[in-house]
Length: 336
Ligand code: GLN
Image 1 (tube, rainbow, N blue to C red):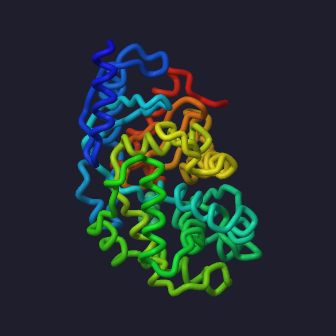
Image 2 (image 1 turned 30 degrees about the horizontal axis):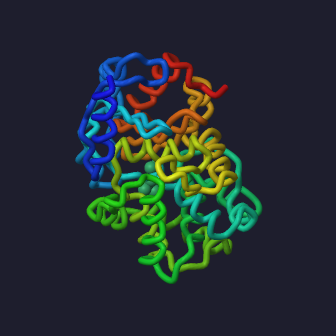
């Protein structure tokens, strides 16, 4: 057992972008990571009922049946099962990180004077509520309109400096300075992001943002194209679960209050217009992205990273949601 534990530690320490699959350990009250692999096997078939995102052309290359999970604990242990060597881009998961940084840069009042705090029953890229809500401000930071406004608030002299600050922040949260932007995915989204451009123009007309729309889309598409593994996601989840403390260094990388705000948004809006049902069935603060990633933070316990690119009609990983549902039930992870 000791050898297994040190092997696990070693594997985590050696993690550079690609994470080597390893098994053997205790997951909460789970007695072996074979149990985790068994859950992956049970859920893999759900992928057939979904569809890989294709509105960003580069995302079409994903393998529909891939499914993987990592769990990361505050004491530095991590366990994975499935196709966990596969990397993904953050897509909407990046909205949690940009929100944390924007609040750190500008303060709570400034951010929420410009972006609301309420869930929406609309799809993530909907323009509808921007027009019908008065005063015209995005309903929350987890939908595209809100996320674009939040990314606008990240401080820096230009796009490059703002992206650099965001990357440095992610490196500190994950302890992995190898994380980079996938330029192909960023470019692919930049060329096809007309709906997001239209959201930006709307926001600019209503004085929510001021900058050049092409610059903001450039920064936003790069933010969405940051490439991670399930283990990186699980580490981000663990920092949020531990109220902003990165446990290996003991550093408060996200202020406690801001970590609390991020987790609250993950519960109320993290799975878009499926957040209510997800809260009932899973009960874990989580954020999904159209690449098929899901970031989970079990308060005080662990972080979870999921990858399953086949999506349901709301844009959430179809097998990933099932996997979290089974995991939460089996190990009583719901916070409710
Ligand atoms: N980059 C994607 C977009 O803006 C993110 C959406 C998502 O992951 N739901 O369309």
